[in-house]
Image (cartoon, rainbow, N blue to C red; front, side):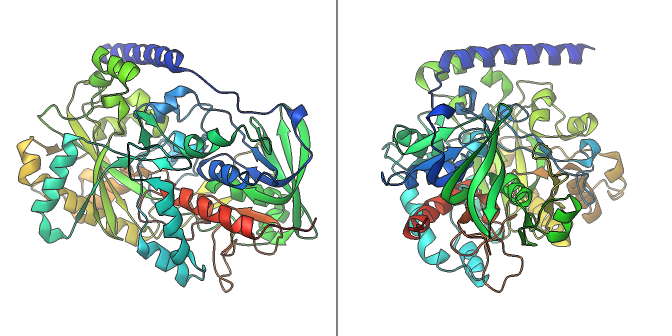
Length: 578
C-alpha cells in the first residue's frame, strides 16, 4: 500500500512540475492560417508537417512564384517537447497518434495483450518532437544497398545534402541547418574506455550527438519551417486531417480534408505525402492505391493495383537490460526533480534537463548497436506512456523503479539490419479508423541471433575494468517462463537469452519502408528514384515510408536529408502545364 501511495504522490508531483514548466516557457506562435484566407488551388500541397514535411514546405516556398499549402493533422507542440529528457512524456497524449500493433506472434510476450505501442508524433515536427533526438550518421553501406535495388544516384547525391543540412559548428546557428550538440555524460566516457579495452571485439564507439540547441530540442520545424512562415506564398493549416488524395485518369489533382467536421477540397499541380510510415500508406489505400484484393474487400474504388503499399514494414527492435552502478554519474528522477536542476534549466538552459539521456553507442558496423541510456531510475507510471509492459514484467526488468535516487543505466541492444518484415493494411474504409499494424517483430531467426550476439558483447563490456570500477552489475530479469532455460549453476544459456529477448524487447520507434522506393524491376516498389508513386502522375511521397531497407543508424537524420534532396528533385521536375 505504501508503494502505491508513493507512486501516486510522485505522479502528482511530476504533473505539477510539468504544468509549472509548461506555463513558464509556454510561448506558442500563431502559425496556422484561417480557412477563409486559403486558396482553392496551389502549386504544391504537402500532407504532414513532420521532419520531411517542414523541410519540403520551407524549400519549395523559397521560389516566390510557387504557392505551397502545408496541411497538418495536429497543432504546435507545447513547450514540454523542448525539454530534452521530458518530451517522451508526450507519448500517449494528444500529440501522439497512439497506434498499437497487432498481438505479436514471435515477440512481445511481456507486453499487455502482446501488443507494442507505436508512438507517432502528431503536430509540427512530427515524431522528431517526441523521440530521443539522437543524430544518426549516414552509412555508405546503406546507400550501396539501395543502389543495388535500382534507386538511381542516391549514393552520388544524398551525402551532399546530408552534409549541408547538419551543422558541425555547434555554436553557430545557420538558416536551414539542423543543429546538433554532443551529450557529455561520464557514462559515455566509461563506455568509450570499455570499448577500447575490448579491442578484439572490433567494436566502434560513437559519441552521442543530439539535435539540441542551447538546451532545447531542435527539429526541422525550428530550422526550416519557422523562418518560412511569413512568406505570402506559403499557407499552413493545422488540426486538419486529409482523408484521401483525389485522382482522375491516374493523375493526382487534389486532396479532400476534414477540419472541425467540415469537408473541404484543395487542388494542386503536385501532391506530396509526408504523413509518415503509418499514415502515408494508409492515405494511399484510402485513395484507391494499393493491393487490389484488400481494397475491394473494403469497398474502396481501385485506382491502381500497387501491391507494395503497406508492405515491407521494418523497424529496429531493442532489448533493454538494466545495470546498477555505485557512482553518482547517471540521470535519476531525484536529479530531474531537484530544485537545482529545474532552476538551472529554467534560467540557464543547463544541467541534466538540457541533455538527451543517450550517453554513447558501441556498435559493430552493419550488425548491431549497444546504446547506453543514462537513466538510472525510472517509474512504471511514466514508462507506461512509452511502453506497454505488463506490470509484473516491468518490475522484474527494472527492480529499483521505486527508488528515485538509484544510480544506474540501461543498455539497449538492437540489430542494425533486422530481416523481419511486417505490414500495414486498412481495417475499414473510414479515415478515422486506425490501420492494422503488424511489424512481425523477431519473425526472422537472424534477428534473434543478432540480438543474442549483442547481449553477449554487452556482458563482456560490463566485465571490463572501466565498468567494474563504477560497480556495474547487470540485473537479469527473473521471468518464470524463461528461468527453466538457465543451467544448473544458474548461468545464461542460448535458450534463456532468446526467451528474455522475446519477452522483453520493445520497438525503437523506427517503423519504415511501407511505401518503398525501388527500381523498375522491383515489383514491390511503390516509388521510383524521384519519389514518384508508380503509375500515378503528380503524386510523391517523402518520409520514412520510402526507405526500402533499414538504415544502420537512427533514421530521423537520414529522413531530413532525403527531404532536402527530394525538394531539389521536385523543383527541377516542376510540371509547367496545367
